[in-house]
Image 1 (cartoon, rainbow, N blue to C red):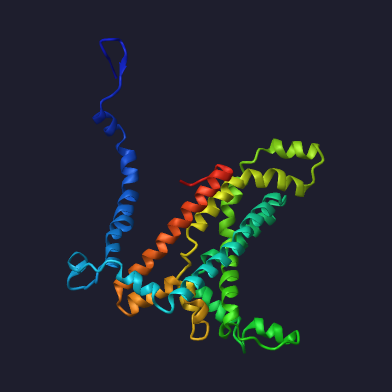
Image 2 (image 1 turned 90 degrees about the horizontal axis):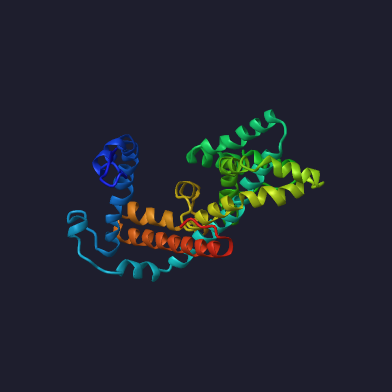
Length: 311
């Protein structure tokens, strides 16, 4: 530091401030490089959605075709069913999976036995680490029409074996509820962390006023974590058409394809299997634009109604 002629303490020069902050710049350098290389740089490849991409010509040398592949997709006979399947499956999963982590977090927060609380957290958290391939293998084994324990229970109860994987109407429920089971414990961590910040004085005042446990939950817990709930809801809604690829693809078969063919699996088949990279990129870009639109709309509504937003 040095004093100026007016007696004021002058700020360090820009160079000195940069040198002083070098450790912090080094700390963020790797994540920044990762984002630039693996997130932003690949965006240049989006232009092949508007080009007749040829590998020998490369991205820059391929001729422009405008909106040709978008018109081809929306003009195809399968576009409507694929978009509808994606939307219905995503909406089903969002509605089914969103409340359970909140309920689990509140229940664990109210639990007075620390040992039981830790055991429950571990049991509900562990399925998250099961790989998608193993999870789908479990589904196929458990629901097998002849040897699966689910059908064995049904038979012992006097029913008839059900071909779950060979019946279209069961696909969405199998996908959604196995996903809820797998992700519920992990998703509850965010809400548990938010609940730890609730001032204990509020609970004590509610007990003095004679409020029941259920009343305390609705009057203290839920309002306190409401901003967290809304933020996660906005983010989840923003990816409503970005339903996972691996699990659906592994669960697909020739029977359930009419309800299981979604945008992500369609893009994979058209791009990787058929080599139509421009067409698949156009479909993927449409998917991303719809997600962005949904994020902006839901974020705007949330901001007006509750003053909670992510943008």
